[in-house]
Length: 458
Image (cartoon, rainbow, N blue to C red; front, side):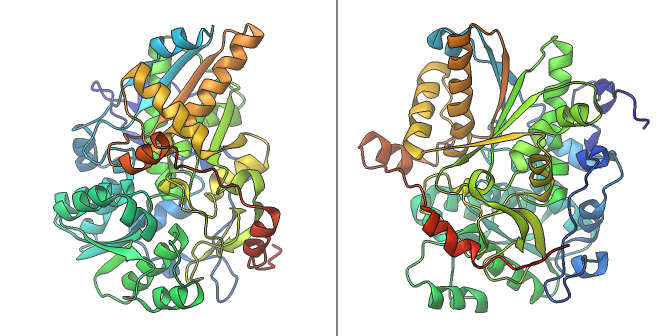
């Protein structure tokens, strides 16, 4: 492809399912910094990454140059069961807010996994099967990724071992049971089944766990079990690549119906949903074809963007994974047990971290009770019960629409509704019973995590 403006219809077949994934890194002037080997502090090679990840996924992870990567037909056929997902206009919400703004949302909850995670899960399971592997290991926070991967592995006849963050394992038993229904083995993390899990428990007795802990355990099992590889539901470049189907469909729908977004909003934990949603729009901004305001929304209890540091850090608590240059709170940071389990990772994908560092997008944080107020308001008005993660984007979309009302601005807002909240009713119960609290880490709390960030200047 040339550097001229891309006609987004080339991405789609007649059924409007993308034929390609879009790699936003190809259009970035400042590429994400490479992953580093924790032993040598040199960029990870394909051979080194291949000991952990599937071969084709390693190729995608390291590819900073190929703009369009074809989606295998078998994956597209699977996508056809639930894609394209709808781009909805929130007419009733607009009316209730009395705002001149137009509000649209891309709804990714219309599949059994209940979230956008299936877009990458099926791709990663496909490449694992193609490589002839027996199974895969992974971590999951709120459970959406674990559910999606369990479904994908079942489809391809792969074994699936999931380490679920302990607080979510206890808060969301039904999400756990869906994974087991699809044949996955689910273990609360940190656990006593791995060496790194036992060490974390010894160092942090009674911990509620974190995604960083669960990643360490999943990687240990993958690298010590023949015929297995580790797969990840967020953070990695390959995952953002697969999730670009969200943005490609959104962009195609906007072009088709003459919708011109001014503000694009997504919740941000590791970055997969936000990165996928904004990808083609960010590509236009990078190529100088259009301008958009991008807003990443994170929980105030785990503020990687808004209070983190842009530095090389370990991707996991056990410090066995590669180091990534990202916005991070420190791999030892274990956030409070908030109810947005998918937004409790200590860092942020290197791609979004670089874009944020370059001033191409914004970030904000919101407290938990305000998020659930927005979730309840959206459910009552628009008829969809949103996941806690998605509700972070809803909160800020509502806030931006109200600012438009105050200023008399007729702007168009698009946000990502990543999934449904039917397995999150314990959280809704605590909110309704007035038992939900807002925790914001102090500077002293964050200093503990920052102290563990290695000093690497490259």
